[in-house]
Amino acid sequence: MEKFKNKVALITGGTKGIGRGVAEALLELGMNVVITSRSLENATDVAKELQDKYSGKADVLGVEADVRNYESQEQAVKKTIEKFGQLDVLVANAGLGHFANIKDLSVEQWQETIDTNLSGVFYSVKASVDHLKKAQGYIFTISSLAGTNFFAGGSAYNASKFGVTGFTQAMMLDLRDDDIKVSTIMPGSVATHFNDHNPSAEDAWKIQSEDIGELIVDLLKLNPRALPSKIEVRPSKPPKK
Image 1 (cartoon, rainbow, N blue to C red):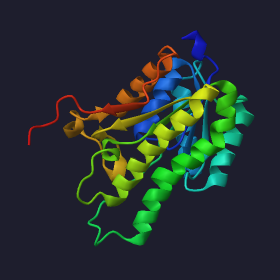
Image 2: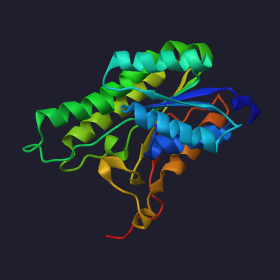
Image 3: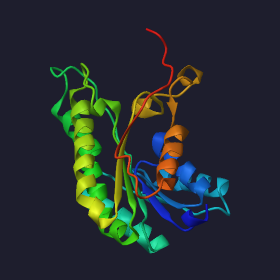
Image 4: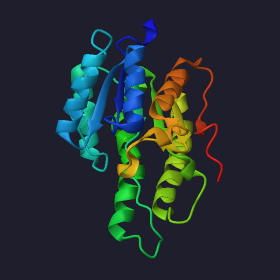
């Protein structure tokens, strides 16, 4: 659509899984995209691959950034503005999971989960919000159904995703008078590389990363008077237990 041409999206953790699925959907829409990874080589390699695939439609920039570090997120936003001159959409997607009984969960695992999944979302938003205000932009956070449903062995992950859900809903109220739209997307089982999983044919029943990309495109196309602020997404037909 013409109205998305030259718009710019920054996607944290955009080299694989949900982040990459969203990147491809936005590139197909004609938006320029910045993807981040903790590995510069990974970020630049995937950016080149996407650039070749969507040549003539939009541009892609790969940036090394660690969401656990606020200054790193500031640099990612700075590079976005230097390259494209604006920022219209933030997709705070980067995340990880450590799953263990609380008796076995280490302090380091707890800290890494909270620092990445929760503080990382705050840092990404904080570094972006002034530019998003100028653009009357859109913030998407990727939470999880684990952000409203707790389970054994999920204390760190549940805490981080419950936090993301609550943070995003409060932020939505803070920013809507600035004409920044905010939504959190809460997927269930997704066929991604999360926790070193390798998607296969056995994952065909799960939500696919491109499904989340399609959902974000639909939300961007929605009339601005409407705001779905919290969206739960489940596989339509999971295997019977």
